[in-house]
Image (tube, rainbow, N blue to C red):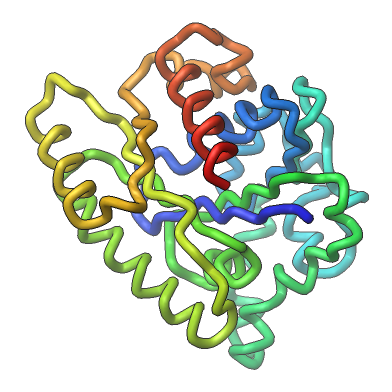
Length: 256
């Protein structure tokens, strides 16, 4: 049965999309069948794999609207074990469209779209969420088994993390009691920077069991690879960025 992981943080610029792309690729290198569902209207995860929603769009919006299935929408990538359902700008209309619906119904739209039979071939499903705690992210949390939280090693990191954890608790109480934290992932870490080391120490102090041992450094390759439509492991496998995500994938597989 596929393990569904929402990759979420309402703060932008924390490495959420970078994590989705590179964790998915690293799990695929480990020969795990992975499906990435891009739920962010900016579609950066899709373009990071060199995939667009097309014209007319065939995207995650169609999945949530019920007009298409996972089989209709999934696209192959350059990695044999990795498929992607891209996002399109149409997703920006999702929240206004469901705003008047029953709160319980609108929170479960994605969960109801992820038919178990359609997910049988996958070991992992990664849900890339937009940088907000709106209806799209709420749907991802209700549908997921766990949440992976990228946290940039900077001043306001803990504040944003606390807000997301409160939202997760609300989701557990109302819709998804089994939802757990997959792990907290420190990103953009620079060991030469005192603030980075201080934030990392605070994360480990407050969330010692949840913080991954793997730490994602600031790395040029992680910034360059998406412009070539490739994950770092296909762009420069020996880079520190690619190797850090390979380490993360191994850690998840070891303790998952």
